[in-house]
Length: 313
Length: 228
Image (tube, rainbow over all chains, first blue to last red; front, side, top):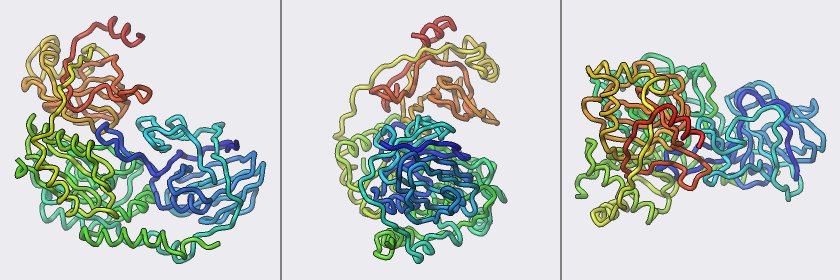
């Protein structure tokens, strides 16, 4: 058995996989990686299944000591990683020799960086997933973010090291640009035309109080004409909820399963990963598209992930 | 009664099924019937279900299903809804120590309705509530209906953290906070019963469809039960 010693946890580092779907009737939301594409690709680089558990770091990465040899990959945002002072290339599998230390710093791009290790991070499975749900203290490593001194178990690594890297065209396709794409939310019609237009045209800033539960947006308020009360109903991942004061909240991976505020729009599946890379103070806009277009974009993204030029050896 | 169910896409991978636009026992039973049917005969590609008062949100894998394909399958399920038998409801009791530090809003709630705190407690504990659904966070049961005379709007400014076990009211709903979370419901008491425990067979103390009564206990009894 081999281990990772957490010498410094970083700002907020948790064990994540692709989440636990199917427990909505209990009020348990899926959680899972905030940028699932980066986790999936990281796992493929180290020859894991896409859904293996890795570490999700937020804004500031940690320092990890490896007493034994390991094969790792960093994906997502560039946190200026190095192993014993040698720079580590992002989106590429790397061999760690026994006794080496991986250090990450502050982000140079988006919000989250993923560390995947061949064999995966081993934690007790809760409702079929290793994903940490911070608010309800379930899953992951003791249901909480990592702390200094934690020792993580790595699953047995069976494959020999091969240098694998994500192809440049794929990286380029996955790099964020343009507006976040949304489809109309169930309560779109509850908003007067002026608010609908404002929502489509406005720029919002991601607020400091954003987290894995939701991203609070700042900007010109999106107001409703009436004060009609909504009956609480199920909330989808990526829903753009508008509380009475008019500042939208994007419902995110550690989401509430139900809610009582009107939902004006919903971010499309293909852009979930981009929500996961938004930092406080980032500026965003929304672009409304049709359901059919959203579906084609998702299919396109999955085709890209299945393409032969995805991983170069 | 299939004509009362309405479909609406909620996102590019979710579909809302609504049974009317008001909270009634009947519409909630329709939600429960559809939930039960979908749990016993799952549709390939459906990933998650979020029941609420009179709606069910169905999350699906958009690579496997489209909204219209899912709607077509669901129509077949809706035709059979009236034949779905719901289990007899469980009758459960939740002991509550009302007022004091456990129920910091009790006095204000009572005053708002021109009654004494003792009358407010009596009223809250006088009714058998229905668990309409679990939602928001793990194990949070939405209970109704609160007697009209106790119906109270949420706090204007939610608390940053509500202690687990807190019993709150909001509008005509009441419920128990299972974990420490921010919350805007008015707190009138606290129970020593654990609403959500991950190391228990029934992780959630309450299930959809249960019948619940609150009983008033002393703080000494609260401490005894908490340490039991």
